[in-house]
Length: 290
Ligand SMILES: [Zn+2]
Image (tube, rainbow, N blue to C red; front, side, top):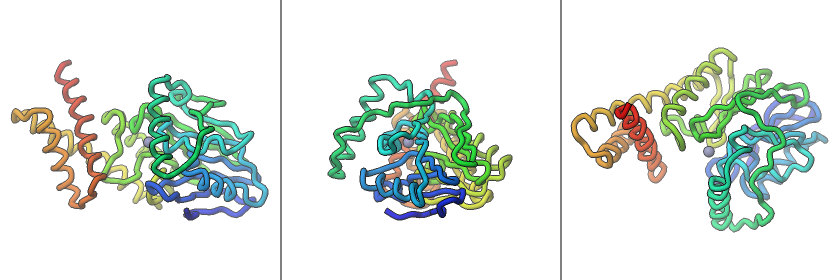
């Protein structure tokens, strides 16, 4: 693990730790003698190291924000004793079935990593929000905004004073959107991100995986890539269906087309193209049955 971004004790800023798995970023917002941990992960050792970085110079971690309930994002929530745990209501109110699936997914990864984490529980959320919540960390306001699309429970964190936008699993790999729920909501979320970057003068986007995006031009370009991806995928699928392709055939054909369009071989990660195609297909079906 490495610290991609650090902020000296007493100053306001971000602390970003890159984990060993999935290019995962644990993100901290620090101000004065306070710190907030956003989606701390992944292994217990990495969470401990992240906590040390946040607590550097006597800072206290007073808040843990969970952007959504996917298992890579909730792994470290118990490691900050006394901190208030904050998450969207859709995370707090997740039903038993989905909770079990999330915990099973986590256990599988633990086994693969050789991690013992018997005391782990699904997050107990102290403060939940429906659409929007402002929380204070030191001298900084954090604007938490519910923005479903990647999942049905995803939110993002905007820190106006830092001109920073923590986008959770949005913009983790521009050109290969990670839509795990609804394509239309995913696209709507990106139009909202675009509005935020433009209106709030965002200088730095910090996704939960992979590289940070610096500058508004790069942020807007990344958002456009995601939106154009879905426009192209939708058009290609509609064309295939109109020419009489079966669903399965159209899905495979469109996924292959999206890979060729990208012009880069992403190996197993390109499975996501099929997933995205399936989600768009489901929506095209729904439109037709209206
Ligand atoms: Zn996720």
